Image (tube, rainbow over all chains, first blue to last red; front, side, top):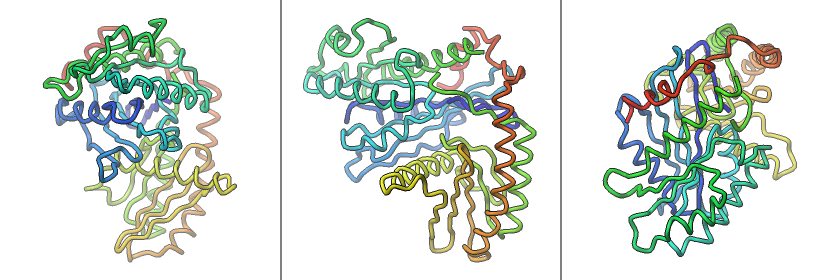
Length: 198
Length: 163
């Protein structure tokens, strides 16, 4: 849910990165942190296990220029991907304005992608949201790996009707191709949606 | 959009800040924060220098959501108050109405009993402010049309300097 503070003249948008375990949600957030102007980023909060797996969430606040005199702030969250963290995943979804689904392009993770997408739909439903109505983009990550599936196959699994904007990415590669494009696309969808509802 | 909008107007922001300023003095607290349940900071008062207020807001909201889920597992609707005791600093967290969380940071100058007592009083005042906010939200407000005239170029230019 977008948050508008008239006293501080700011709009805050909450964006959640979702996807199966080890697909690169945290890597996306860390890449965004490293690629953002230090004046425009806040402190990165990472709640990880000793094995660097996300335990609860990662959190990165970003500041963008003002729209009509209101500072635009993005709050990026990533959920823990492992199946057994379902309860905490659901908590993070609450109040989200937009969702990025990060898919792991490796063939071995084909089923994990599909299960995670189903899990996302269930969690959205639990809060009364509809995946067809929310600002939602898909990112096919790890395109640089030799074990990655063709994009057509990933699309057939996760975006068969082509209803959602999707991007190829490689969050660990130099320059992180696709990472900022994905973020920009979801922010744009959220703002267009807010414009429509006004 | 996933759900509605949380809007804080200047009038209610001022009222909440005044209640917090009074509470800092009455409870001998170090700092007080009001955070919304989705993790956004509404107002902060007291000795906030050196505290990452944005990070604090998101962690308090996460912790409150997790505590709420624990309560439900035990058949409770919610644990409206939780307390974290440190060596020198302590955190008193209470849920205010449906949407906000009040966070009081205090040290040896105060005590849990005093904080609890003063928070109870402030709670009623804050609940009144939230009620007002909800009424306004239901009635709608024309001033809300921030997004109406933004263009695609405005949206594109948002990213020019940040990345």
